[in-house]
Length: 156
Image (cartoon, rainbow, N blue to C red; front, side):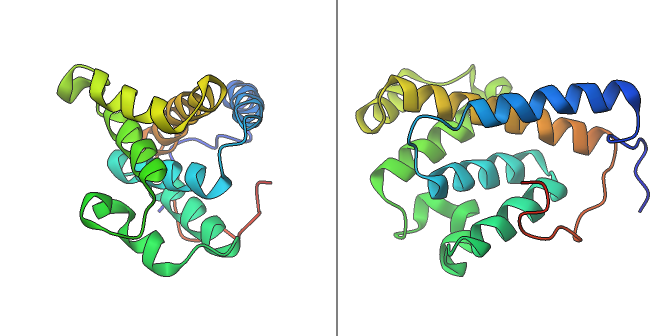
């Protein structure tokens, strides 16, 4: 499969990506566990059908020691018993924040539950991560970026 557009050699796309990477790095300063952030990235990417990001974030999570069970169950997290209440709150926020057109945005219930587990800085990290993952997903899906060849840490 060939990409419709090379996001790294196209001058406009490369400039945009530079800023999205900088924003992604800035969002990670609040102390939300990296494992939680990876779960949010995986779930957002699954919802959006972004194979590139699912490939990347499942491999990165495994490389950092995440269990295969937790990685494989993230798409069915509501029925799984392997996630903490805080992780479940983050995953619910990721789902509603990604599916905003389906339900009218993030419900007060989901937000309030997330706020029980995360302070304002951590909520900002989660919100920013969800928004930025949606950006990455759209860049990749719109341009049909191929997936499967990612090596853990490749873009670190």
